[in-house]
Image (cartoon, rainbow, N blue to C red; front, top):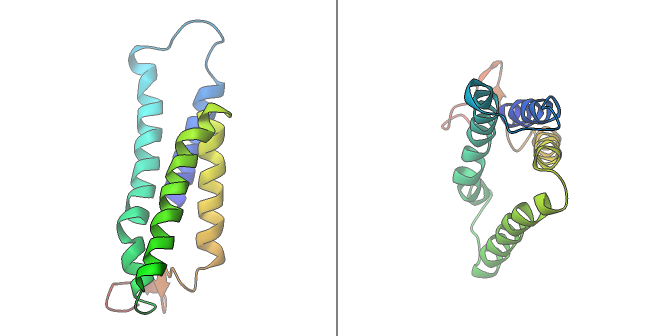
Length: 124
């Protein structure tokens, strides 16, 4: 989540540092590409491991899995629709802050460290 937040804030700062006229090209495009890569690095494990993390708390019924998929699809739809209303950098910062706050609020469920060491899959 921290990687995603750093990428979103750097994308926001890059977008506001652009001149109002002309399109950026060349080496100046490296900054937004690195920012988007950081956002991707931060979100990739969240999507890949979410269902496994949910299953650790018990068995899922078909209805619960259906609600999970419906919520996930609604979130993806909002993620494609919202940047049409707001600028993409503002939306990315808002999503990154929300994700960071959610993960920190539920740090008991998403431990980064166990007894002073990094958490391993067999420790959690």
